[in-house]
Amino acid sequence: MSPSQIKPDFSWLSVDTVLLDMDGTLLDKYFDDHFWEEYLPKIFAEENGLSAQDARKELLLRYQSVENTLQWTDLDYWSEQLGLDIPELKCKIDHLIQVHPYVVDFLDYVKSINKSVHLVTNAHSKTLDIKLRKTTLGPYFDRIVCSEEIGYAKEQPEFWNKLHDQLQFDRERTLLADDTAKVLHAAKQYGIEFLIFVARPSSRLPVQYSTDFPSVTFFNELIPQ
Image (cartoon, rainbow, N blue to C red):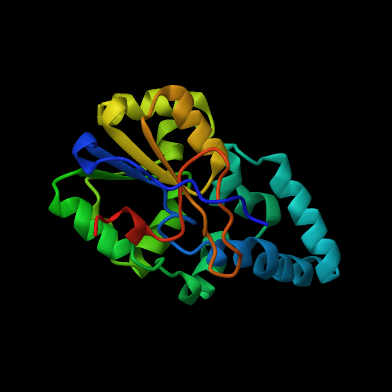
C-alpha cells in the first residue's frame, strides 16, 4: 500500500529555475521498463540460444551491477557488452514512447510565468535523441543536460556541483522534479530547495507516494487553479 501523499506546498514566486528529469517524470517509463526487462532479454535469448527466463535473469544481474552509475544508461556500453545494436533496437519499439498526461500543460505554464526550464537526465545522448524525435518537448528547454556530459550520474553528489557550474542556478530558488528518490536525496544534500517526487513514473504500475518528499501523480497538480 502506498504511503499517504505529502502534497506540494510552495509559491511559484519563490522559484526561478525548474529542473526536470525525463524518463518516468516527463515520459512514461513503461517504454524503458518494457525495453530493458522484456524486449531486450527476448532478443538476447534468441541471439545466444538461451531461454527467455535465463536471459532475463542474466541481464537483470548485469543491470544491477552498474546501477546508479553512468554505465547503466550508456547505450554504447550495453551495445558492446551484449553484442547488440541497442539504439537500433530501441527505435524498433519507439511507438511506445509517450509523454505523461498534463506535461505539456505544465511546460506551457512554467514558460508563461518566465521560469528557466532545464531538462536534466541520466539518459544517454543517443536515448535522448530518439525520445526528442518522438516527442515535441525539446523546444521548451533552455538547456538540456545529460549526465554523461557532466561525468557523474544524478545520484552522485558531484553531479550537482558540476551542474551548478554549468547553469548557475540559485539552489534556494530552484525546483527539481524526479521519479527517483536517490536523485532527490542527492539534490537535497546539495541544497536544492523545492523537491517534487513523481509518484506514477509508469502508466502500468500503481501510484507510489514518497515518504520523504512532496509527491504528484500528474503535473497538473503543480499548476495553480
